[in-house]
Length: 311
Ligand code: GLV
Image (cartoon, rainbow, N blue to C red; front, top):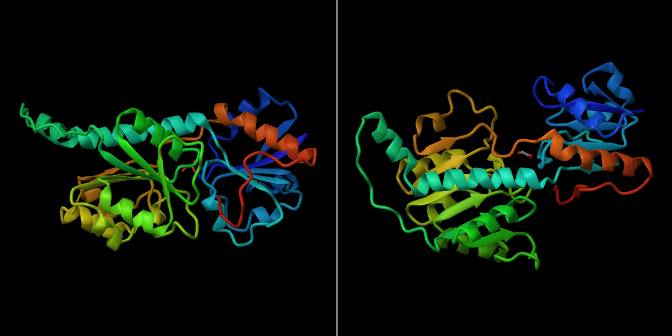
């Protein structure tokens, strides 16, 4: 029997759903809340935003699995046991969902959704001239499991896409750039900026006031990476002054976004409560069970994170 210590970051309301989903594939599994005393016997932790210090108390742990594609929530805990492998989820269904979200917010901007919604409220039947989007330059920052799907989807929609990441990936079919000077070049030359980067030491605070001011006037910023990659006040300022046309954000420095946050007052910033790609137990349980079995057999599990690179 494998005991799994579970924590979904909120109230553990999804524990039964995950347990039932796992039981369909593997009967020898039992789930317990991470904060329960019994969790100290667990060999596996399946967690999102676990309480600081708690994982270090689980002395029998053989595998930590993030309940999302990102693992940055784990690095906040400096007592995290360094010897335990950490796996992240890589799920084509989540990448697909995320690309749908990007397309939804991008076209809502390009086709003036907020203008027409405001006119509808006043029963005004009037139009803006249509933007020419054919071959429009789009920069996608981060072209891993998610970003590459988004970039491909946008390329198929006739955008001129350039992906930016740490290393060139020869198997990708869109333009790619790497390195600091290429980043600056993309910032200056693209109207649409889509951040899908993992949060690491090198991507923290990447989008500063200076970077927003270097974007062409009228640029649009989309973020489904992490809030901490962005200087939020600088973004707000760039939108308020009209330098940027607006932004669509699914991630924030503090989540839930506090009710007093000034983003709520800026109509040109579209706010989404971290829902661009939600983890689906049905589509990821198989890779989690495979990794648990691999660890038990002394093999390397799937999708293991490099603690130096932090993703
Ligand atoms: C969501 O942000 C995730 O990391 O899956």
